[in-house]
Image 1: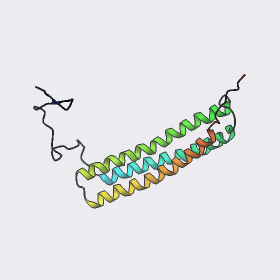
Image 2: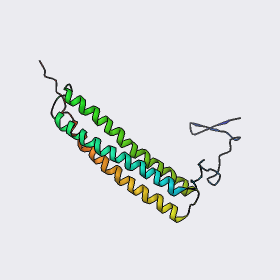
Image 3: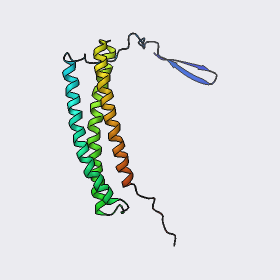
Image 4: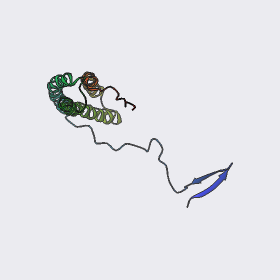
Length: 158
């Protein structure tokens, strides 16, 4: 049963029957590290490389479309095509983000399990490689996005 108490104009409620776990009792539920960690890391890397190849191919065509649409209004066909292509490029970018999230999950599992240093190093190296890949892609997205930005529209007063 909750107990209400009033102090200095504030009311506090205590729930004595609720046990709060101590930090040593609180553990995140995780799956154990895969037995074949090297194979899992290799698969993540292969997926990321494939996604990066697709991203690079899409970035070239998206960049051309954005250049063609630069300075045109949002109502132009060229701008609409460039925007759709840019959205597709962002989808390609998300595949790299997902690979990085997979590595982060493995890193968390490894830390919880106090994995061997070589496992931690392999995960850290892959994370570093994927972070670099992601940062390059983010730079490309920013550059293309800048080409698609429209100047603020002003309303002519009559």
